[in-house]
Image (cartoon, rainbow, N blue to C red):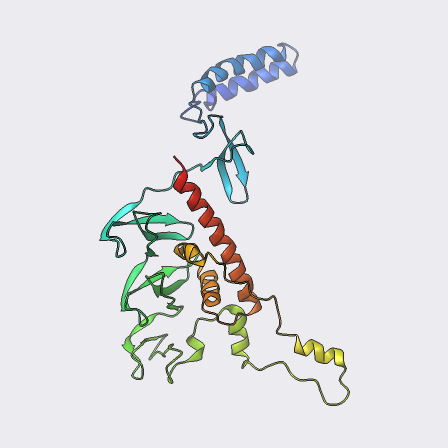
Length: 311
């Protein structure tokens, strides 16, 4: 407003406008005269502001609001579905490395959950990896670097920079390694091994979702069977179905096309959907997380296709 309409936001103009409205209230000046004295110069200033038009159909763009925030949309909707963000995303920043898949330059991009590294040849090349602070440790699963990242709540977590690897730890990696399997120890003090295949591993250090962690902290005991005497069948059915929940979603046929966008998911959503892809059993809470993650991945895939064909 200060840049485009300096006169309207000036203190002198506001005082003059209030004085004119007082005269209208007292009956000294007709209200159309006061309104026109304001509107006529404002209309001239407004006509000088450049208007954005839809690049697809030429109609004017207007400000719209959705649950994701404000954006510009074509006034020809629903015939034309063109939209664009109010603020353009930052330009991709070259990082001085070559893509290991195609050799093109790698760039740093901004996503919904922070920055990530991607191939500049997208969509022909879909290589991506996480962007974070290197910890100096190598991934015990694939040998890539382990990065420190931050969740939306600011909590640190540690994961492999390769999106093809599912190594993830919510505990800092120590310099010591496990004498049994060679994995880096995690946690505080002397540390503990989180390798599930190692006989010395500590199950408490496996990054579990909240529902599973609560169950594990209580000993992971199954539902108590109904008593031999004096127990009703309804009580037994309730105990039997206590741990049941929504069935997990099925892995979609286009899973390989969705994988490049995994880095844009929250850590807990990504963990749930990757567990689904590996065929691991999911808790009811994890099933919901996986279903929500698949929905977000499909939406992101659709936006990527639209961006690829946009002029």
